[in-house]
Amino acid sequence: VQLQASGGGMVRAGGSLKLSCAASGRAFNTYPVGWFRQTPGKEREFVAAISWSGSMPYYGDSVKGRFTISRDNATNTVYLQMNSLKPEDTAVYYCAAHKGPFYSSRDYYSSVAYDYWGQGTLVTVSS
Image 1 (tube, rainbow, N blue to C red):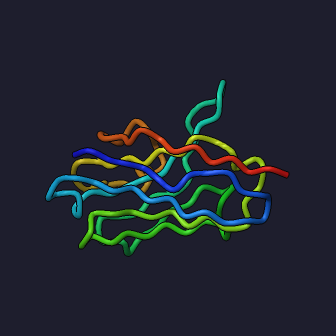
Image 2: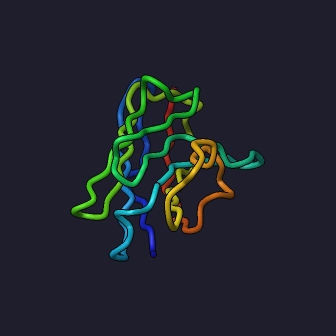
Image 3: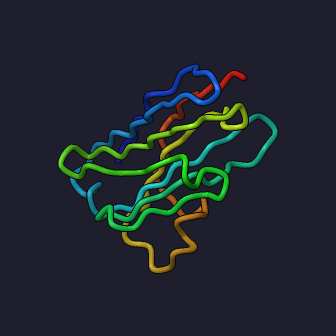
């Protein structure tokens, strides 16, 4: 499975961006997918994740109520709609997928639980 993240860019605080994670591979629609972000010198931070069916979303505390994750299994794409952006949302955003189901909800939040990673897309939010 190869993942391609896109949609990053520069936006003013309060603005919106929508990230996309396009995947190759027929089995992608059975994989849970997560978004993580990272800034220089910091550990990768969980942002959001979604179950293979799309019925179960998970969010990090810092983005709850502002970000929405969704997926379209017909096109092998996962989206991250980001609203009310803040300067502290500035980071490189990565999408990741796990080969197979998660049996614990805790796994959705852990970067080490994911098998495949995209190349990252930069989001810059100016004040």
